[in-house]
Length: 226
Image 1 (cartoon, rainbow, N blue to C red):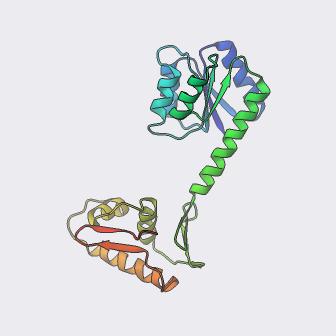
Image 2: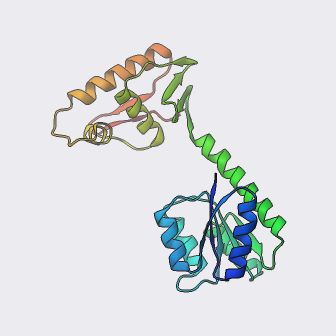
Image 3: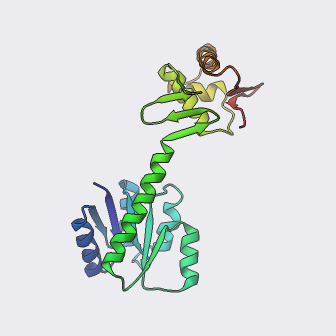
């Protein structure tokens, strides 16, 4: 069940939105001030936020700006202000949609559903990462190269996923060890070298014509540019 947070100081409007969204099968939570709403967002994970702009203690645009520093949760702004300039500013700030008061409840449900569909598609696409002829399935922890599934250890998979998620970054042996092994790096790079060598060998077996992991001499490792 998808969770929706309604941040709206008008209790009647908040109740009306919560009721119709609950009837549509969503799990709905309410906040009535900007500070309480922001605390909820920091404390819990929501699938979508309905956000009023004129809120006590902390305005909706402040909340939106701060939320976008750590989350891409869909945010639909609901406001009595209907100026084009304000809409553009809020959309640039990171709002996904804008509904003007007074609103039709059917429109709210339709926009909520549409934004959740887009979010689900985006989330699904992010679960399979692509690089050259490689596909990395984040959920199943499987890597397919040149239509061949690699038989990787957990550490080898972890290295490959880390590199593909950070394609431009150079990882030192210390970076890799502390991230993948979850332990302090004490200068012995044999573990990293061995796993990197085995990983490269398996990649080469899947496709002898392609190079995937580049050694940046004196620095570490990264993916070759596509």
